[in-house]
Length: 484
Image (tube, rainbow, N blue to C red; front, side):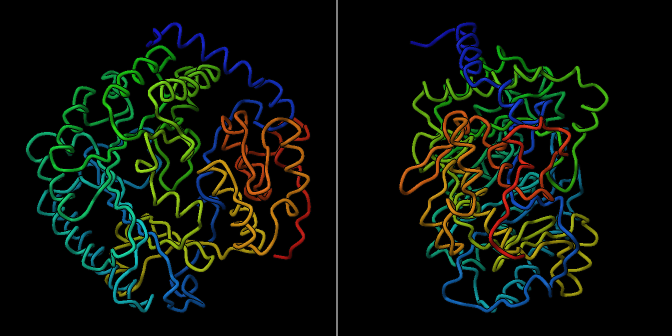
């Protein structure tokens, strides 16, 4: 039987209370102020030194064993959301978009030349932004035709396209969705965020809550039924009560999956959003930390009650594995190489991570000179490899496969991080069996803090003074038995 909102909120508060958050603060596991940083990519992209094209590709040799996931970035939006930290530009004219598409087309040729391949062998694809559908149907068809002609789809398990509600409603929206389906897109993620019109307006969103049902209907009519929607909690104006109402309404949409994101105030990507300044100026606008935790728990409770679970991928609740992003799984859990196309795109190759410039003029100028516009990056050390082989899988599937870790690093995870693992196990954050190292319910709830435990001190996003001097402060480090 469906619980009413007040009962749901009360139950969520009791569940959060059992996690004993004060103890976690005293242990140094989470910052005293509850500071949050998403452990998306290790090392964090905001901390890389400069790197150019030649350095990134140094030592690469083409092989039939190369396995790639592919990302392309379309950096345009009808409106730039105030919470967004990704590279995007609001209200750009059609000719600027055409110029950018010319550059993406040329960049694919440049990449194929450097990889010494006729086509990119894609295991999974994600097109994002910005708003990846903030193109006219003519422009979208042009991009899809150019992009897919250079991809070998033989072993591609999933082709995901990120869309915005405002771009897939009405007849033009339906036309865009039919184009996606025609070119092989079999999964879409819709940036819904919320259903409350007042908060959507405050976010500077281009749609209303009532538009979501039409967007989903259009997708199904276009032949795309693997639909995921993104939702955000912790934004100013949200309460546990209106969040529970949103979650109940989302469940009734009967979609394949949805992903829940805590509001990211601290910039984690290359173009900080307005939300960071707003927090500095008006912290009282934001929900209390306890209420943010209650919202997270409400998301779990309501999803589980609807038969949707996140034991496939952290924060992503799905009816089945079909709804989960193969791109995320392969990039972060299996550490596949990444071909990233377009402005600010992340790339990785043979243990080297490279990031494209976020300056659109610099991007186009570089492409027109025949150069791939990488601006910064990191050639991962052995220390980096040992840590990212824990962080990626733990963050995105909340367990580390011991045999995969050994295969990927040549060492046993339980030997490398024995002291850290023992401390986390002793305080109910981790457990293990013969094959896997797991996060417990407590560790899973604080998955990003759990991952930051394995960061090198140079990359921990909060200063040491942010933590209590307890046994679980991430600055308590054991010396790894490796050099470099």
